[in-house]
Amino acid sequence: MFVIVPCAAGCGRPAISGSNTCAVHAANSGLEAERIGNSIAGREVIKDLSACGLRFEGMDFSRHKYYGCNFSGASFSRCVFTGSKMRMLFFDFCSFTDCDFSNSDLEFLSFAGSGISNCTFEGSTLIHINYGGAVIRETSFDNSDLYNSRFIRADIEKTSFENCNLKRVYFVKARREEVSFKSSNSAEAVFEIGE
Image 1 (tube, rainbow, N blue to C red):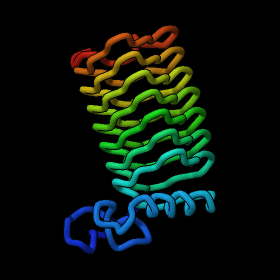
Image 2 (cartoon, rainbow, N blue to C red):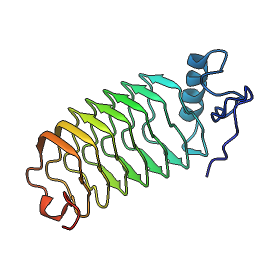
Image 3 (cartoon, helix red, strand yellow):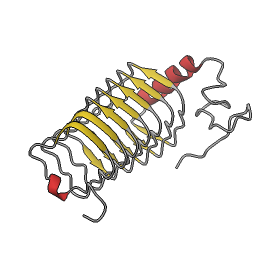
């Protein structure tokens, strides 16, 4: 698991891997994001990476294996994560726009409080994922296994969970508008405490 190294500026935020400052205090956070992207591209396995608060646009994160990484507060636009394997990653309070996580194998991740818009998680294994408090718009989880994941207090709109395994998936106090569960085992999901 990653070690949190505090920013040298004394702000208390975690420093970016390979740097002594956080994204806010980096001399050029765009160059830091590019450096992290290049570092990922050159390796099959990425462990203990800290990239909190960086902005990634149009980057390819696909087909890598990630373990114990922290991307909290980062923003991702038009990024591709297809075919990735991820374990114990933090994407808390991130922003995802037009991103593709299809055909990925994700376990024990947190997207708590994140904004997810026009993304796809189709055909993926999404086990023990925390989407608590996330705002999810126009996103597809079709043909995915979401066993024991959490959408507690999430705000979900125009999103599809068609042909999914929803066993022990919690949607407690989640706002759902124009959400499709067609051909999914939604009877095995939990929508209210006491079910």
